[in-house]
Length: 115
Image: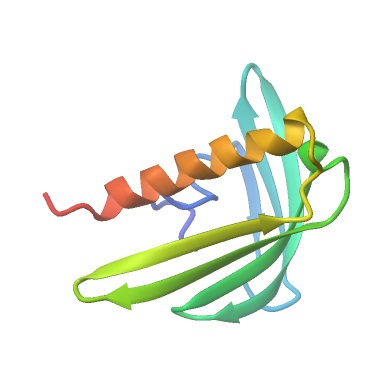
């Protein structure tokens, strides 16, 4: 949830309003491909440190509220992260979410790799 932490979805936002409590809202402006992409949502479930669920509305979801659900499962000294983004339109913009979430998760993995 820390916007200053590389690997989080909020990291590097051009503008961010974040209230990470149930029913708390967020606004995220992400710069990508020469433009700013606004994202909005509200937190639906927060069971720290194991689950986070929030809505996600953007141009890529055609303004429809989709759901992002993350689970964090301890596995020895490591943590298995599962991310599900449901309700995303089945079109090019919707499919681009997969690439973007893959990038976010790769940054998260790099953040916690032992040095």
